[in-house]
Amino acid sequence: MSGPAERELDRIGLVYAVVIRLLVVAVPALVSLFTTTPKAPVPAAFVIVGFVAWNAAFALLMLRRPRIWLMAVDLVVVAAVCLAQVWTAIPDMKADRISWVLVAASIIVVAYQFHSPTLFGIGAALVILVAYLTGAVLADLQDWTFAVPIGSWIAVEAALGRGLYLLIRRGGRMADREFARGEQVRREAAVADAQRADEREYLASLHDTASATLLMVGSGVAAKPERWLSAQALRDLEVISGQADPVDGDVNLAPMLRHVVEHVPLHIRWRLPEGAVTVPAVVAVALCRGAREALTNVVRHAGVDSAEVGVSQTSDDVVVWVRDEGAGFDPALIADGHGYGVTRSLVERMDRMGGQAVVTSAPGAGTEIRLEWSP
Image (cartoon, rainbow, N blue to C red; front, side, top):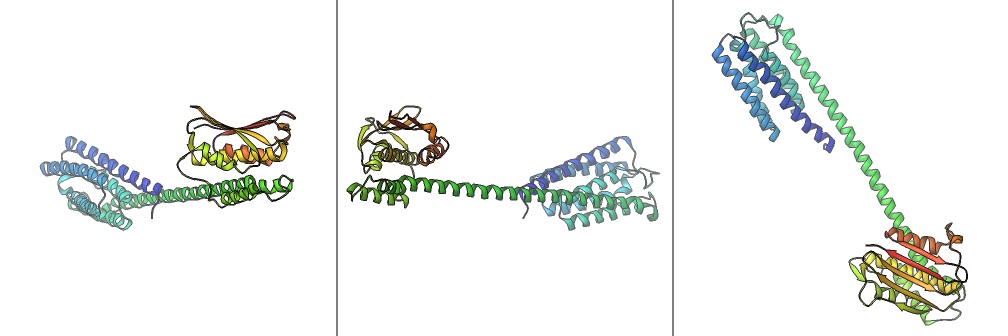
């Protein structure tokens, strides 16, 4: 099955073949009609005008839809014109002189190679060659021994035309193969990128949930069995298994945010707008998980038991912020990537959503983390 480049080359070849044939046949034939006196002027005039008109009709029909029967009819017409040299030939003209019939036969056998099947193109060249030589002998332009070398050039032109056409199609096939290979490489790269993105998102989810919970237990936040700890572990399991978060449509951010952080062992001061804050579900998931990670950091590092969580919305963006009045830290110390929770779980997640995470903190001055997303 041919590819798009090969099909386009076939289309262009067809257009050029029939259009150039039309022009090359029409110009010398009409010039001959008005500038020479053939053996039978009246029949010759009918042959020339009729053949030019047929070429125009043939070009239009071929450009609309190429058909093998149309080419067969055309071959009969061309052969008849070659045999009609008994009328169209100029008196005392020899077969080695260029006539409009020879010009027409030459361009037509070449054109056939660009818009017909191989066997038809070869057969058509032979039929036209025999018809031309026969017409030349019947018109008494020369005998067979002299006419054959001149007419045989038609066969050479047909062979060269077919060879050029095959080279062009070969180039089209090579272009299609290269294009297909490029598409395959792009698809594989896209699949690999998607897999890496899924892996990063899974690792980030794992860090936000189970890892964060285990770190809190390991750091002594929960020294004994706590109700909030079991609830948070159940929530972690739901998130990791993909059962907790919506994936389609728009959602109200505030209720989701409350649900995600309700099991964090902190006293939360809420700053929420009165109306609904509607965002795409995937953005809401990223903002909620980012807020939970920020609160987990408060539990582990800030040394306080409360934090403020707020949501604001303007025409330009949606912001979720988490503030605490705890120990704080120097953001420059984690800018090199050693702080996974800030650099990857927060910053990289927001980057993937087309937003940003802004961390403001200083030792002894508390911390504010702003998660910003613009529609």
